[in-house]
Length: 314
Image 1 (cartoon, helix red, strand yellow):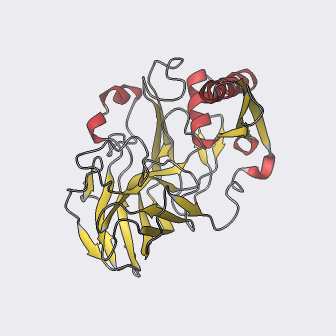
Image 2 (cartoon, one colour):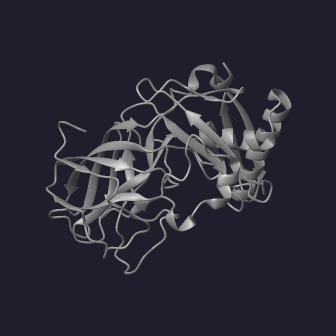
């Protein structure tokens, strides 16, 4: 429990999808600090005893649960909700899966795969990836957003103007996020917490891990944001930078195909140099490697790069 928080929002107050008709679980004043008990993206489906067979029994109607929604008193359409992410209380257990039909290289990885993670929630020491290496951790909330103005239930899977499943690794402790308000009260929810993820989350999952999150909610009146924006408290890759990177590229006229080529190249490199199975390399790339658009102006070809941190094998 957070001794300095104004409210604790328990994990039982979760919902699937965005709908402004979902009743709020609490009404708070701007400036309130709240602790949210967040479920992982599989709603607790995976445990320390899970096997790869459990990947095929995931209930896709119950993915990415978010805790909330919270009605912020005075929030009106046109305002921005200022979300200061203060800290995380991780659970110490996580999972990464290749889910058939999902992910950047779904056509190349048709079979399910599963990695279970155990890490120290107090020290956040790098988590072991089997015999291959250790992944530095950086907890964050993959799904964080507000209810949209458009009526009806909207899938939680794609990101939206009002936030949602953003999967931005840098929405970590110390970051301040600004979200466009479309409905009265804003109706804020958060979940899908991760212990680590690479930019791109290329296989479709990160180190999915239940944890508690403490945030402060404030209002910026008449901000008229078109899209979310955020401010980080300092460097964002220092947990990965110390040993440099291996980098592969994809070059061509299509950014998606460039991204696929860059990731495929890194999987090939890891398999050749580390003796990894392709599915393990794919999942490892998803939890710690970064996709970057390196060049997008020299038409007709663009450059996408994939950065893999060598600290994993140090």
